[in-house]
Image 1 (cartoon, rainbow, N blue to C red):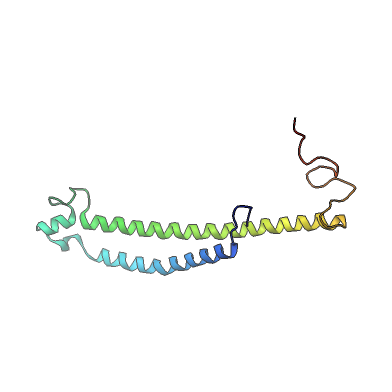
Image 2 (cartoon, rainbow, N blue to C red):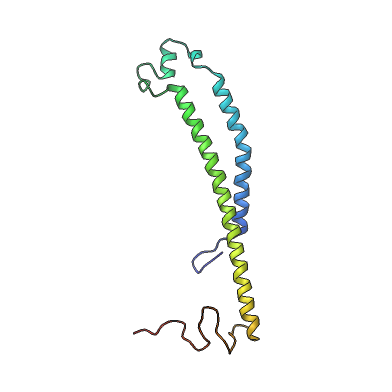
Length: 147
């Protein structure tokens, strides 16, 4: 895929997408292991003293009630990790889909060009008789004349 201002190597994009998928598969069990370890610690384990209350978000200087303290922060961090992994996996799938669609479109363009060039007998010239694709005849202007 390219134009006059950029060039994208679809094979590199596809390789990067497959690498992202591989890393997501590698990180998912690790994230699950961390989540399991965090869930093993019950909030009562922190105790009821000032340190325990602060860790649970109930003590002074802990951000106030409702912040969840350390337990809440861990839960939000784990949600972020899962969201990141999910988004990364979807991005990799989208990149692979983009590569597949560009290859299909390129294949269609190549087939159309081969048909066009093959029917004229002279490479690069449309057939003398009949219209070229798009309904223009060989002598019709490509663009309307400027007024």
